[in-house]
Image 1 (cartoon, rainbow, N blue to C red):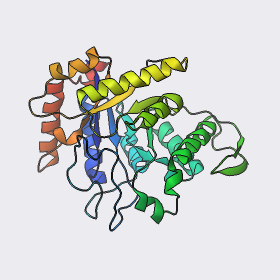
Image 2 (cartoon, rainbow, N blue to C red; image 1 turned 120 degrees about the vertical axis):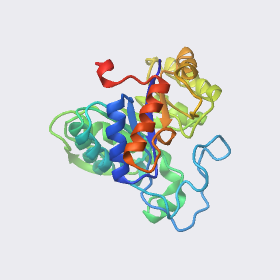
Image 3 (tube, one colour; image 1 turned 90 degrees about the vertical axis):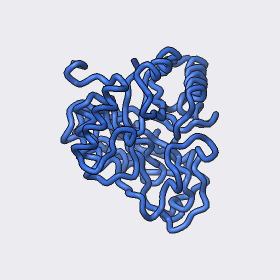
Image 4 (cartoon, one colour; image 1 turned 30 degrees about the horizontal axis):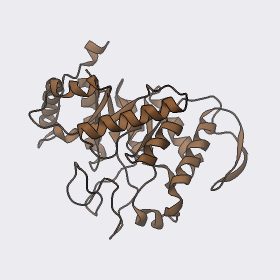
Length: 297
């Protein structure tokens, strides 16, 4: 049976904390948080998954969307949970200086005892970049350079950097090395090639169909083999489930080599009260064959 995590976006911090407690208790593998820094009053940008199957209806971000800082929220989640992994899906790395991001990710990783999965993406909302005075057209190379700097910062040694977007003299961010897996997002050919080359894992953008997911994972593994790297690196695939979906329905992913699934949390996390939401999420866990922590141990 594949591992099954949850992803959520657009919920309040307190609701996310309640969800995290329940996910940890019921045995879900990870909780992935989406993010935006702000919502422009108007925008013309289109999400990369436009025209494909999407979970959300209507604008992905507008003035009613609840926005949170995923690293700040994961620090709080780490303090109230024991085992659930803490994913960002995805963190728009190019919007911040990588030394600031290094400081935050190291803190979360140490608080959580190594549970952070740092999902990164180049971003798509041009108006968000403009508001933060970051060049939108340079977002891909900027993201990759951020990851390069982050890996140096996580290494626990002093380093300097002279790159296209960032330059600084010798600094040290942390007195000891910290391991933070970098999970690249994106479904297009270039995104998959970048994930295979630069990432420690991959997470799908949007909600691909079964056939699209299997094809993407196959492409990633061929890229990895072509590089002489380990082809078996984690591929987190977001899947849509309905009230009729069962563990047997998800087993087909494992049979095709897709071992890590991510379900939208609102498939179970819904109801007027926390107690009702917990009950519905527990029922989803049972239906999908998610094992409780007691069984996992």
